[in-house]
Length: 344
Image (cartoon, rainbow, N blue to C red):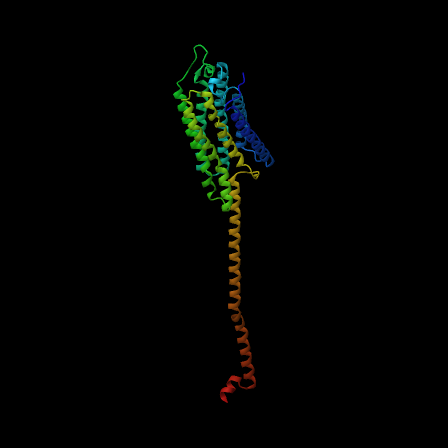
């Protein structure tokens, strides 16, 4: 039975708006990357993420029509069971969606950091950290009750669940890991772009775009407060509407990665290749400058040698002329001009 009241319309509006934006931006991403033939591992991860993201969206919308956001005193036992079931699937698909989305961001940064091993290794370590933690949360959420259906239908005979405190601790640990890794990925572009040959405005623009992942971290921080309150709530489905802010975190993380691909990039997106090209051009300029210097030095040397040896080149001719003059005057007995001058 459908019950659409209290805060349920707000849940529907929020989910619909964010999902529409996410799909439009993802479509733009696919178009841009295919057009530029720059499809990479980060794109595959984001494409895979659309599957659990779609299931997450359906769970949120279904929950908004089945009791999520409604005070429990307004619901029958059957309606409450339906609401809890949709909320259960929401939690499962949230964990399933956030893993490939965060991996997409990590692989995007790996492509930017190509050739810088310390950054690449740190990104792999961070990726392993949040992947393992979210998989732990995923499997614990699914199997913390036996049978699984007991998580939303407590009328099943012989069913049981682990203490709620354990599930809350899993929530805390997962949220802390996600917040930490989000901030790491948001700050990493700063050292990556520090020595890139871009003007200051370009560096600032790219750094801001790549650092928008911090928005996902802020969403996670806000969600943590509601997660703590939810574990002690006596009106679970009504309070659960606040936890649907997790969809905002997923959308922020996805949007951060999409905005980083907003401008068409060259076919090879490896910064190592672009850096190598810049280094090569710089070396060519240095070599050309050095050759110009050598040519100038050679020209100066040639000019100096020409000016320095020219007088010496005329000495034999002058001496030969003087010898001929002496011989002539000796034959006719006349005195040399210099001798006549002295005699006179």
